[in-house]
Image (cartoon, rainbow, N blue to C red):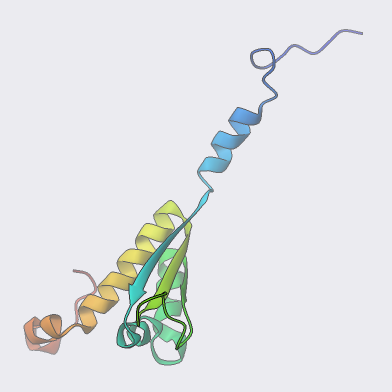
Length: 118
């Protein structure tokens, strides 16, 4: 019988093109350290804040349990995972939340209004 013509160069089994496709779906992770107070701000009452940030960003955000600190520190670990764009969005959401909770923002906010972004 007749052999099917090769789609790529000899020895290429198509793995490179498959890898290129998977590259866009590749999961990324970023770890940040946060004080206990900031960890509470990130999580929010009954997990409401962290859930809202996960929904909005498409990333998965995890905060280490109380008394589970990054070695040599009194800080908790905040782990943001997902596709790169989602991780970037999730990290931005976490930092925004911490900024909005900060004293400098509270003092400078016009009429006590909270802005959604920096």
